[in-house]
Length: 250
Image (cartoon, rainbow, N blue to C red; front, side, top):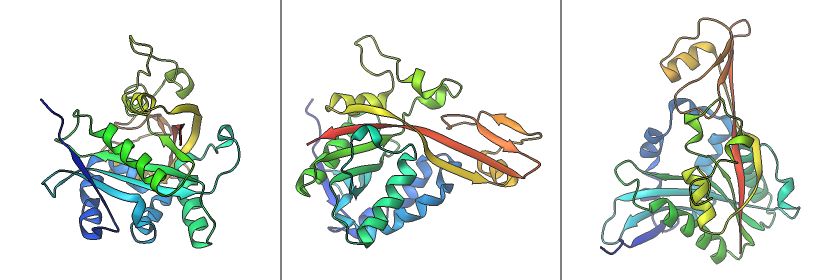
């Protein structure tokens, strides 16, 4: 059976269609992931950088099956020096540089979400290819990505460094998302251990997770790559998520 063809529709081409997927994106993430303060800049990407926000639709259909968000960055240092703050750094730095008129050199992936009902069909690979195409058409030097390894949530007590050593029977990354990038020629740079930082009161964390946190300590929660730290005395919960920097040179 032949694989379906997918169309790339950017926020410049059809802003209503692309922005209309936001509620669908939110349903795909654990609730706590929607409360990173840096994610407030994502809305600005749709209006200020519309060429780099896109959906994929099957040819002849207007219903998006996936969305990709990315941001151009100015980066001239060695890739090994990309910061530990990963996603948070990329979106805040990218918006600031854009508003200051600084010329970008690379495209940075922010997220790719394949919507429920369309997963397991190779769409994630098509979405990464579409992002690489966006970078190439913009004359940028490559695509970098603070990749969120999607199976890491099954092993929250394993360090990101050890997790990166796991491989399948073919010697490829154990993690499916890392494997997608690897199969498209991306090079592993290093972990970005503080890619996202999410804080909230104990009550907020209990609301976001549907769990009780009766005492201070670390807790494993569904969908989290590492445990969340709860401090009942200070009334704060802190989650610092590790991601993995990968680089697609062009």
